[in-house]
Length: 374
Image (cartoon, rainbow, N blue to C red; front, side):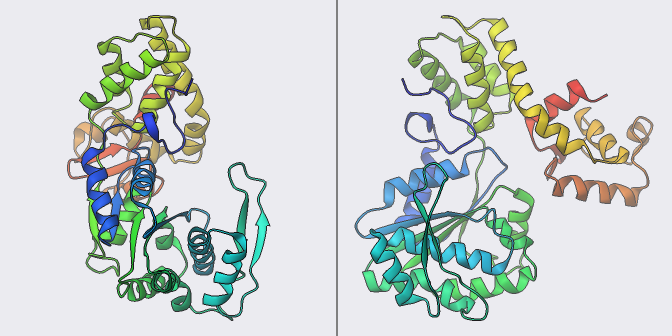
């Protein structure tokens, strides 16, 4: 039996639900060479959506390259990852991969490194350095390959916000934009998990990537789509869950895709033939136990002021934190200190700034904080 609920990784097949409109829009972008920018909070399903569209669009005349640059901390670490990912995706055999690398990139000695990681047979090491390779040479690689092969290439880059955290980031962004904007056979899908950084990269008129492509904010899947999915997946697993309990799963985790699947799985493992109220409660406890170490680590080094701001937000205050009603209960320091508190907690991804004020970024963190932190 296939596992009915998947979390902590991208999902596909029966585990991929809804997203019909987003799938259609992104598929049209891939097929027509339109650059795409996806912005959303964590655990909403960006990676799953991109991989879904990748599977729908790649074929004889279109190659979709997927890479994750989360571990890239410098400009040339990015170029190494970029070039090796493009070459691996556009070469069907190892010999052709090495040949392509030598043909398009000067002064390198490509090596194939067999990987101990599950699901990855090998990686390609190119040894790209500032001494031997220019940024333009690397950034033009997919366009050159696309022209030679007579194909369209779509380059998908996960965790793209890492570009914004590199030393001399603005200069790197200008270089990348100046090259990619001239590509006609290659388009780009850029997305990442740090919402405030991605927003800064693409929404500011002052930034190089402003208006780089079709930009859309990926929203949460609504409850009316989640509930039948949950009920059907429980049924596939030989369990029966009521519509009310399925709705409460969604409400508990505020419809966050990964958390819906995680909580549903934990409830299923606690259930007999029919899901009971006790199984629902036990599932919540199991889920909180799984995330508690992470949340303890996140709050371990927070200041008293920062903890108080989180307490205030959890208590239902979302703006005007300087009013007496708030300051009489929560010591937040001076008004100038409040700005620093907001910035620090946003950067740590504990809170989000919305048009309606400040909110806790993670629904399970809020649930855990209310229960465990006094």
